Image 1: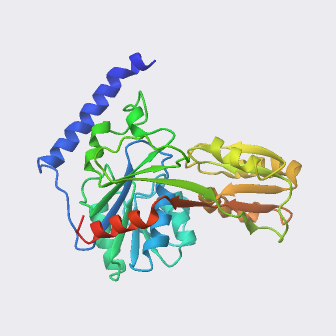
Image 2: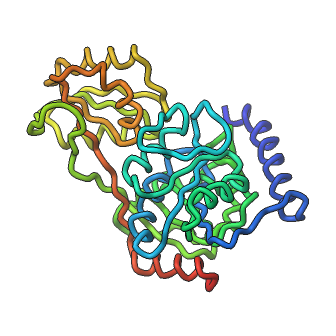
Image 3: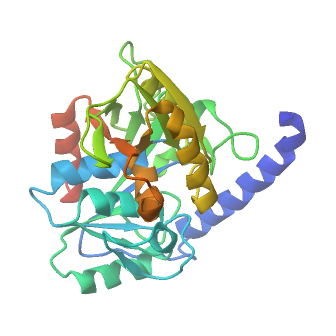
Length: 328
């Protein structure tokens, strides 16, 4: 199958290399802003942990900076610049920006597919912003960041992958050279044998928070539940929930799935066999809560949050702040 797809991968890689060359030659222009910008991205499609990393940076940098978050708003039906509010619809702004806003209501979160156009509009909306986080922006080179962080899954690192459609890479491995910091996410304890590519390399892991009830009558966590998720790695989430419950059943959907009324009916029907308890992700809840009026008062919904833990955190934050202030 790889042999069949290989010519298409070569063609795709050629297109991305041409685009990169146009930026390198200055034919395609990149804009620099007075406010420092942190780009959070990856070389592969989906599942590297960009949204958890964005939340991590908000947690650790907001005491010193007034942060604004700008995302493309993947999966939304709208276009152009929009300010994300806690009561926004995922259809209008995308599920991940809405998830961030829901968890950090005091942080300015915006979406715009054209980041170079979106940043001035965000600063006009909130002039006090002095640090911008660009979500999923490694390939979007129209903005020159102060720091470019590239994430790669420890279990499936980019240097063992291939360009689409043979693999999951958006561009060739060598383009890691554009990054300032490389973070292997979802890392496991043990020896570190991964290639550094002459970059400062860090390792992070994701740990689950305590389950938080978001709907229904206050109750203790039952022994069984229906697990609902539409993320890049549904199986990993389901496996983790197996360790928290005696009995589960899963309803898994594609990443960024847009839930329908029929989906809700199916979920509610299936949950009846599991104490009418539903466990889902924060990313899914911002979409499911649009159907609150369809939920019976007997249904209890719990959200499983995820938190990033950075190894050598002090060193990582020091390196990051140095580069924010142009000392890297």
